[in-house]
View (spheres, rainbow, N blue to C red):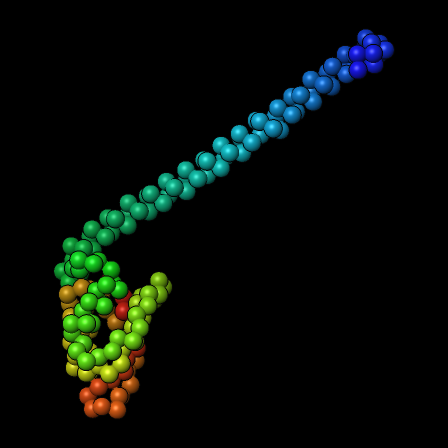
Length: 159
C-alpha cells in the first residue's frame, strides 16, 4: 500500500486522502449519526403518543368521577359489570341456570339464562338498573316447558 501511494504524484495522493476522509465521514454518518437521528424521531413520536394517551386517561378519569357521583350508578366491590352480573344473578335468579356470560367490548355483556322464573328475571333486571346502573340493550325470551319459566338472551351495559 505504501509503495502504491509512493508511486502516485502529489495531486493523486491528495485526491486519495480526500476520498478516504470523505468515506470515513460517510461511514460515521451512516453507522452512528443517522441511527441516532432515527431513534430520536421514534422517541419523539412515542412521547407524543403517550402524552395523548395520558391526556385521554385524565379526561376519562374525570368522566368516571362524574358518573360515579350520579344516583343509581353505584359501583360494586368488584367494580366490573361481569362481576356484578354474576354475583347478583346467583342471589336473585333462584333456580335459573346462567349458561354463559361473555364480554363484548362494543355491545356490552352477553348473558344466556335458562329456566329462569320470569318474575325473578324482571326483578333482577330492575335491581341491576337501579342499584348498579346496568341496563338492558337487548332482550330475547322464549317460553320454557315449565309454566312461568323462560330462557333468555340478554345484552347488558353500564351507563
